[in-house]
Length: 80
Image (cartoon, rainbow, N blue to C red):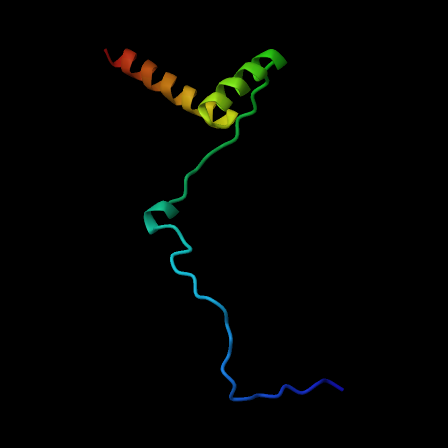
């Protein structure tokens, strides 16, 4: 036999309400990204890690920044 639920008029304690848990609507725009696998030798990875750590960045973030900067340079050079 199932236990019956007893309803009362006691106030419910639901916890705290948190406001603004979602980012702004313009930040919810879907960004289409693809994964690129890159093989590097151990000494290169160590140097990359040192540079990334000195800048307070992750290695992937640093490489992504460098690729974008280089592409921007190449595009501006080709436009001249």
